[in-house]
Length: 423
Image (cartoon, rainbow, N blue to C red; front, side):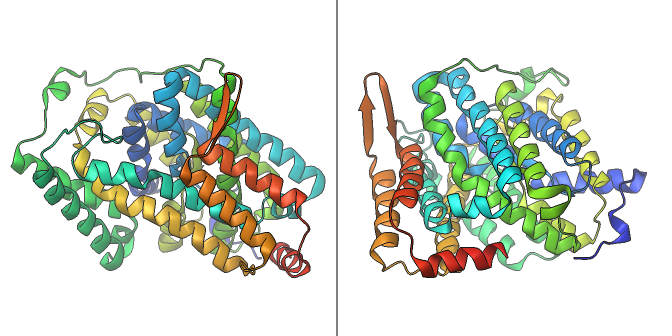
């Protein structure tokens, strides 16, 4: 791959405006994760900005990507907050970040091919599918005006369905027919349409906005060590680790620069991991590289990593606007539920696509066993207990997939596919 002159790191007023635009592209997805999981959206803004700056420091300011809230961790965060509270869950999120760091050191020692050998598509694909499928009932419950677990009705069902389905329809239409940068922000369009409908139905309570200060310190929460939370959440990082590899390949293709070699996938993985650990330490959701922003980079042909610095600074500054967080938290459940129906279904489809693109023979007994056990045990809710410790859900699915891949005899055809992918 050849270099572009426009990738030179620089600062200018134009770059600052472009940076704000990049944050706008990421904004809908960035704040949706904390709103769904009970974390603070202002903290998520801060940790996205600070995490991206840390990533740039680790990668020497060479890669034009923006890091923000990861959808892969929504289900374990929701479960973790209900089971261990936010501080205990945060210890698991910090540990997930350090899992990335450990992977980065292994990649540096053994080369990028090691990641594909340890975590092939036959493992990561079904794990991603499990994440989407486990979240499906949460999306449907919220679209019908209930809490995520369906235990309470927050909005009358008929009203909720009108709002959620219109929010969903607008999101789909924006993603299909949007032009230019508008095609990259379908979530924002869906939220805006649903919010306007909620105003019409009179179901938004603005009292928290009135009492919120204009400027305030983000409500940081610090982790409390919890072994159960750590062992439950860390395996979830398996799928995003492979997605990170794909995201770096994508931005390399957009800029025509091989970031896998320089600064190196080990550095980008470490930057992602440390950004995630920082987010967990402060009370934010784990970070991941945003494909929406990569799409915006491809659209604008602005490859200067300094633009992402400005996007990060803008995110950090917005984190201190108290009324912004208060407004975001007034978004009613059906609005988010309608969009979630599409998003969580999309996560499942990404997992399916991972398997399809890899070209594995899924009817071979080895591959069939791995995929079948990951999906059924993960979605079915299989749980193993050992004293006070228990492992289930996505965490169990991830660990089970890795173990099966290591112990079951390899298929020569699949090994050749992995080698071709690495080459």
